[in-house]
Length: 108
Image (cartoon, rainbow, N blue to C red; front, side, top):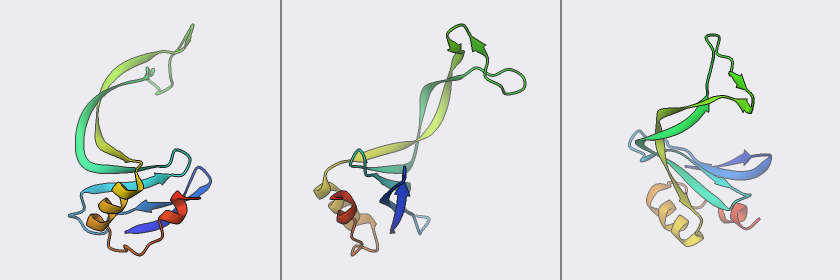
């Protein structure tokens, strides 16, 4: 289902799942970059640099700032759609409230 929302202080819209069988966890349109992001239920492993923490959970600071270490994280796969026609096709397949005026947010 598409709903009105806000992102970084600007009006936008989101896609929220309403049934368990929905293929995504969340979707949101970023009005600044003009891209809709689907966060799917598919998980993948990625390597990411994170702050190194002491035994109290405080970041360890070095000469050049916070020290970092590489961690393997399991994240949801993201899909980016920046074409209005492609987005319309996806919404026709996935969304129950097809009459939602998402184009007003994309053209703003």
